[in-house]
Length: 107
Image (cartoon, rainbow, N blue to C red; front, side, top):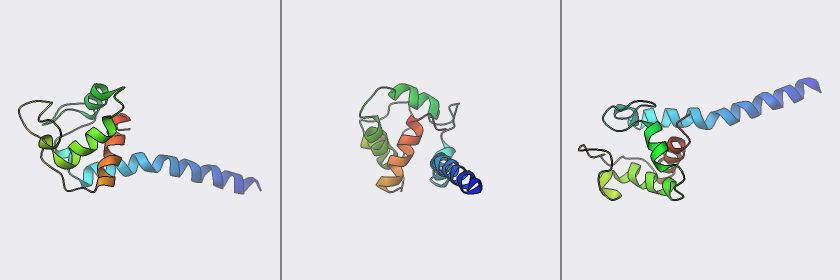
């Protein structure tokens, strides 16, 4: 019985950790990391800067998902400098997952 409980706790921990790792992998797979980093500006702002800017904004998830998918032109133009963000070939679900991950501090 004890081993069943331990196995269940371990499984819950794995499932709880999976979304964060999956979204980091999704960001890498989607080439987001070519222009963005966790804690420093590359071409675009860091994920921490983005999360800070949108903190408390109830529409941030949808706004960022739209921006991730459609680029700067899809959501009110450029917000972070002279270089526009290009549109990305990701599904709506992946764009939303990335948006949530970024807003959570990309952890």
